[in-house]
Amino acid sequence: MCSMHSPCIFACALLLITPPHCTAKSNGTSSPLSNVNDTRHWRSLEAALGVVQSSIHHDCVAHFRHKSKNHLNVAAPSLGLNTTNSSEIAERLHMKSMLVCQQLIFADDNSTNRVGRLASTAGATAVVLYSDTLGYLTDKSVLKVSTQSRLSATRSKFKYAAMKDSPLFIVLGRLDQLQVHHQSPTCPQGLKTRHNSLKALGMLAVFTFHPDLYAQIYIDADAAIIDYAPAVADYLALSLTRQVDVVATSNWEGPILANGGVLIFRNTLRGRTALAAWWAYRCLTHDQPGLWRAISEMWPGWEQTKQEEFWADKTPGVLNYVMRNHELLRQRGGIETRFPCEGACGWLFLKTGCLLEPVELPGTLLISPMPFDPMGNESNGTVRKMDALQHYTGLLYHDEVGQFICHTDHLGAKTCAPHTTSKWKDKTGEELEQIKQKERTSQLCRRCVSFVNFLLSRHRCEHDRNNTIINACECHGALAPEYTLMQNESKVIAMCPTCLDKKLRRFEIPL
Image 1 (cartoon, rainbow, N blue to C red):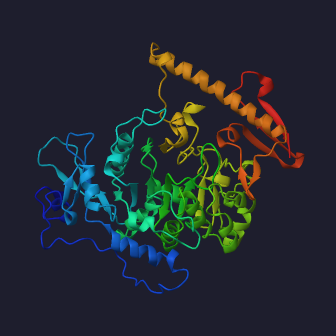
Image 2 (image 1 turned 120 degrees about the vertical axis):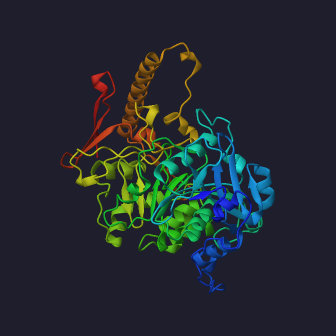
Image 3 (image 1 turned 30 degrees about the horizontal axis):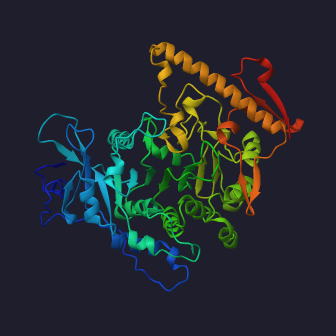
């Protein structure tokens, strides 16, 4: 236990005093940075670890001030910090270094001499968030079409970690000198944003400084935990052979391989190597293409020359490759899985890039953006559905939130934390809910019928742009119908059960 008077370094951090017998935690890595002249060294795990070791501090704790819902205190003895002032932290880091701070958990009491402690990292799954400044994480401004702010999102993560007795880490700061002069064989254009892929480096730092962690879930600043029941490790456990090192979800609108706002990484050599590759492959404005390339390198038989062609494009062909070859990738990896995305799932995935069910690949589990059966193809229909990781249409079309994390990107708050419009201000709670249910039912019917008609028109969800196949359909439409593949009859049955008109409830789509 750590208290304001304990000799433990993390309690002492609150007083900016480090007793002589308190030492910083070892980073657990002593591998030499060998082969620096190797043409592949720039994207290696060793190269990324060199940046972590030289540029990131970790003798730091963070906690919300007693009786304060708004003030997040950061204490780092080596930097002389014990403050809630974002500018003071930024000035000390000077955009040349970063800081990893672990949540200090206090008992929920009213005493002035509160006792705090750090959650154990041994075998644990950590919650990780990144921001270049502390102020960004504690901004009280309401996010797009939402009741949520970045402050409330940050507090939700602290609350979840404390409830689960899981360690939580905040990664702060920027490395502008490194970013401004960034060049790599795959990014001659350089970077357009200074914070590009710093979250990947921060996640690697958490594993480096806490090598006994089992895994971590990274959550963007604009994403809040809204269901406190799920355990992060349960998503990794969906793999029968426990071979999955990255868990990710697509968008609720235009499909992509993996949205970088909520990610689970397992603390394995392959997981850490993927984080290092993601950091190395940073380019231009968006950090997700580097993530997609790092993930694709987990797949046996993937040709490097193919990666060079598409990885830096905003909407690269990697998703299109997975749509057509996920079965082949599993065969190459010798993977036994409950989530092969067969039947209607495989048919829709190939047509749209949208997943009705999770699909497992070597090292990777792509979660569908809707609640799913955790037993997959072994299901007998009796197991409660598991939350989508994020990006379920939820309260947009349904009467349930249905997701672990509410990510407000791309107006995503509509699905999980929407504003109540002023036109309903005079309604009672019960009246308001009845109105909302009626609207959701109607919207889901319209969206469902619209997409079925699109499929019946023989239009395609994909087209070529700059020699890259991209997807033009949106998953909140593609996932609205209920599908049954009738392979022997060469057709798919698409159902829109919320439609009041019976003629709009059932359609047959030729294969």
